[in-house]
Amino acid sequence: MTIRQFRSETVTTDSDNIVMGLIGAGGNTQLRHIPGLRAQPGVEIKGLVNRSRESSERVAGEFEIPEVYEDWDELLEDDEIDAVCIGTWPYMHAPLVIETLEADKHVLCEARMAMNSNEALQMLDASKRAPHLVAQIVPAPHTLEIDQTVIRLISEGYIGDLVNVKLHVGTGSDFPNPDLPLHWRHNRDLSGNNIMTMGIWYEAMMRWFGPAKTVQALGQTVVSHRLDEGGRRRSTTIPDHIDILMSMECGGTMNYTTTAVSAFSRELDLWVHGTDGALRVENADLDEPTGAVFKLSGARRGDDGLSQIEIPPENRGAWRVEEEFINAIRGIEPITHTNFIDGLKYMQFTDAVTESVKTGNLVRLPF
Image (tube, rainbow, N blue to C red; front, top):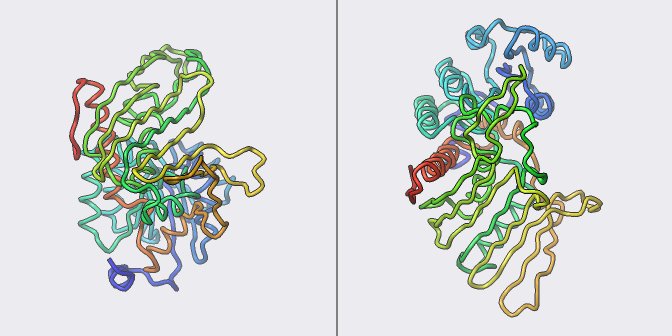
């Protein structure tokens, strides 16, 4: 879709004020979305609804949001609201997104997209029935600062053809600890098939290489019981360590490990090996003067070793989720981070991993 075509299909001009409503006001909504939306000219946050009246009033008071709704139906029935930001846990994403679109309102939905790919497909279908509305999923943010450079290097042939990606993500560097509380990410009723940050990093890798075509996975739930808010011991079946082998549509393979129970493991270790070159991504030093989170290095055929690849400030991507959402409503740019099609693809991957862990079989995508 060209920008001109995109402008012609939107219903709000760039001179209009946009009135927002918030459904769910957890950590990311408070940290990112409320400040990010208010930073956009002509955007007003009219009201919100959270899990309880008490929490709604607390957030509304802290951020000076004028109205608190009794429930999300009341918010969606408010004709003054043009767009909705959904900041709930994944179990509510599909019903809320579908209801928001059917209420003729634009929607920005927190990640992960849904509980599973069936729900994600229903959300995509709902967005197709309302092509004049903007539908966006909050993107995986981790690699934003290096995406532009890595994509350019791959496109220019720096690595040649992909041979293998080795990705290790450690979301905890301690020994397994059963005394840690039950988080909503450990609760399949709230999180669905999502596993730790597995889908987040797969989404980032899709930006570089495209999707996988087959998946085979082994998962462990090392800490199988945790204490809930009431102090009750609850079982969890969501893996806290998983090893995934993928064949990629673009050629080559990917070995992906993500763990929350591997003591002293690195937070990130990412290697990209090609027929003509290699890239490595690792955490930057804490005192990195540029403030960069990651360090990118590479080597090509004939080099003696890896050399750091400097990324000038103008090529470093950054969080601009709310800006992109509002710009899309105004017809200035299309949604790229992240649209519902890409969201469906990472949910299909998530389901494929879940199926492979359950059956031990290789699973073909789309699943």
